[in-house]
Image (cartoon, rainbow, N blue to C red; front, side, top):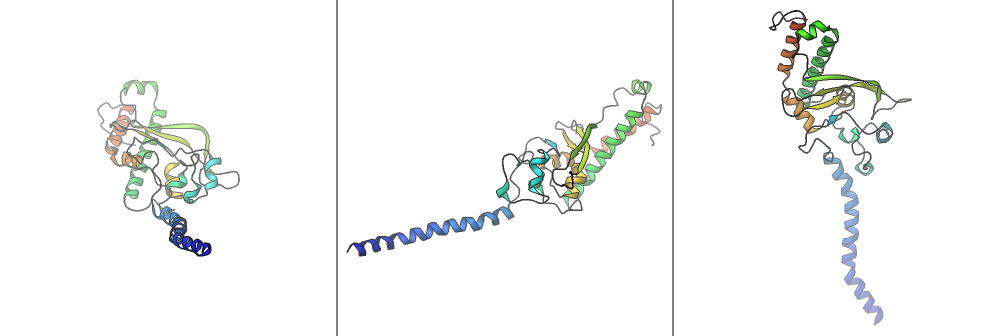
Length: 234
């Protein structure tokens, strides 16, 4: 009787055991599938916040072990959560398609104008600065740092050095500015397919490039001896 009673109890519990085991197996199978199709977990700049300094990541020792492609979500930790590998998703070797091509063109132009403005300021003398007072502050300023920054994605030998400059903007006449490294576009976006944050993409898309171009032309004309922006040329 006891034997029959025990088997009866086991028989009653069997569906519960099967369901529990099935749930464990299903969770193991679904987790990698879900991770493969979901976008990266929200990072600063993707949640409607103001843009952060783009292209700055944790140190190379933290990021390089993740490799040069997007890693499994199981490898994500508090320390490496800001590494660029978690944003990889754009076709490598090209800027991408659609909105990223527009973003790339605009970012390239902004950097060209910032470099042109920086060269012009370096060539101006004290008299020209005095004459052009009020026109010398660019909407995007180029700042050079000492040394070179190592890549956080690519390593060869002792590591790959990718840049030493920063672009910083007050917003181009808007309330929200941003900053980014000179390695962001060529190395991270183009070479490794790193997706910029939503806040930074919105900043670039809304930046007034025409006003930037006009300001540089006016400063160039002023430095050449003009005062009203006439006779603008290289």
